[in-house]
Amino acid sequence: MHKMKAPHVVNDINVTPMVDVMLVLLIIFMVITPMLNKGVAVDKVKTKNAIAMQAADKEDAILIAITRNGQFWLSPGNNQIRIEDIAEKVRDLQTNKLDKTVYIRADARSKYEAVEDVVDNLRAAGVDQIGLITEQQPSENQNQNQQKKPAGAAD
Image 1 (spheres, rainbow, N blue to C red):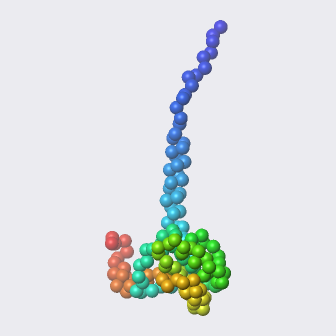
Image 2 (cartoon, helix red, strand yellow):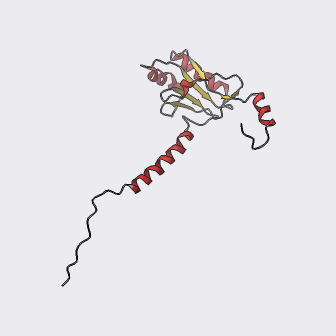
Image 3 (cartoon, rainbow, N blue to C red):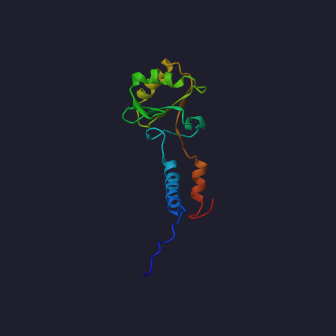
């Protein structure tokens, strides 16, 4: 009678499938992260002489978005807020913060009255530093340079 012997037990962990899954997740997050928009999407006003405000991109920057239909959104947290609650909420967010600037990102087609209401409520909250978020309009020199280059030319 011939005795069958069990195959040798493999004690090593096979990490190849785990590494494959991790690489796929890494690529997905790398692609999605630049697409994440802080707050509500609005069509910003285009300006020629914009001033860069890097502090507005910080995670804890206080940002109020005004949509085209007159809704107000407060970040951090990206929560919809009523105009009456802005002063109180901003006051709470500003406690223990060194940078007291509040940024307003209004849709280009929102009513001026809505922007003025936000500024008025921020003044009531004691905010004296307000930044208006706009989009840099390409200058005419850049447009002319782009038109002069043939298609496919290197920059």
